[in-house]
Image (cartoon, rainbow, N blue to C red; front, side, top):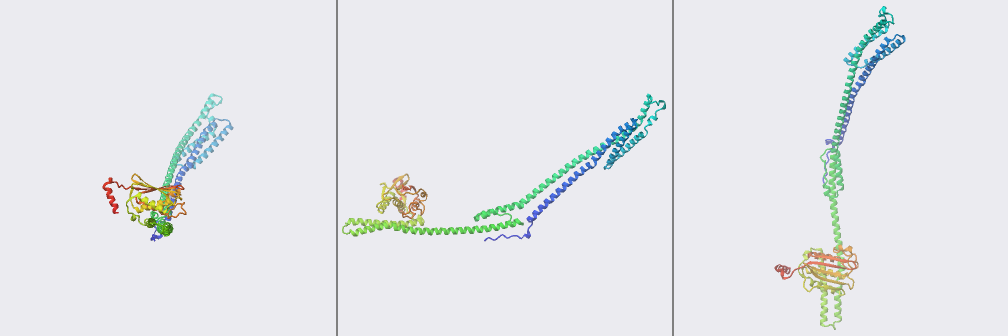
Length: 565
């Protein structure tokens, strides 16, 4: 097992995630507090500017407007009082003047309550003095209504005379001109005060707009700065906390999905040097990865051990099957030759007095041929075992082989083994030579011909032919037997495989595998053309050996090598 990665105690953490998050939240809280205070301060500036307009300039403008309105109406009331001779009308004019005085007094009282600078206060005191002087003149005129008449000379006292009328007009004009001058002076001072108040109010309005714009800019800058700081805090949290956690989660998923030790080793864990909770998690993931590697290695070792056991079991089963098939095949293959030998021996015993020397020699030759066949079968069985279970190259002894002669021997031996079989040969008289092992090639064509006879119904013809095809010699063995199903054709040359329609027919399933192995050893090729119920045709192609004199020294050297082999 791997040594587990040691954990650092929590007491040596430099800055834990809780501390980082607390610091970020504290920063955000202070930022929010600073933003709120700045907003309140900006609102206070705006409120001060608005309050100055609301509490000073608007009431001042309203009071001065009332003074202007009331003072403007007062000369008309004064003129009406001076023109009227009727007592009722004069009383009405006096009441109107009284109402105007009350309005002016109220406006003056309102204006006095407003905070003013020294220049405005000086103008206002001058206006009050001038207006007081004007009102005194008006009151004197109102209290002495006959003063104008007294000023007319007695000689011209007749009211109807032109002289009396002109004298009265001049007497009336004297106080009017005097009060008018006082009124104009007060009105001019009030105008100056109003103009100054309007100008100051305009300046206050512009200052309020500037204050509002500045406050809005400060608030916008504070919001921007807050956004930048929040974005920075989010980036810090993402890089130092969120991203490492997501990376650890992704690596844990990869570790969980990995099946081999190489895949597990390929998962690198970052952040093991950190001194916070993420560092502890990363080190825990490393321990988990090491344990996963050990588990994968143990699992792989167990799988290899299980595979080895399965292979050994399969090998034991194969050997058992081979032994069973060998016994079955031997009992079948050797029974027929023994039966032939026993039959000839019985005939020789029963007919010993009637057999001529020639007949006796003929039967003895058949017995010897049958013995030779049994010997060949034994050699084939032993050779097959060596070829299948051992290095095939050790059993390969090539030389010059005439396929026409070899096929005749194979056909003749098979005909003797199966007297009832119809084997037709199409073999040329001229030699067709290949470079190969005669014993192995004998097994190839013997197995193919034996299968053709074995899987053909009684009376079915089997055809053996050989021909040249360019640089190759082509051997064809064709039958009209049961054929091979289409689903089995791809596996017919596999070891121990037998067709699905061969039940009840003795066989080991290694014949065609052995044929394919030997043909490949001779750098040849074998092909199959078969249809179930119609028969099969096996075509073997082997490289042709040129033995003509035109080949010169190269052919002679090759033959020498063959003879030496």
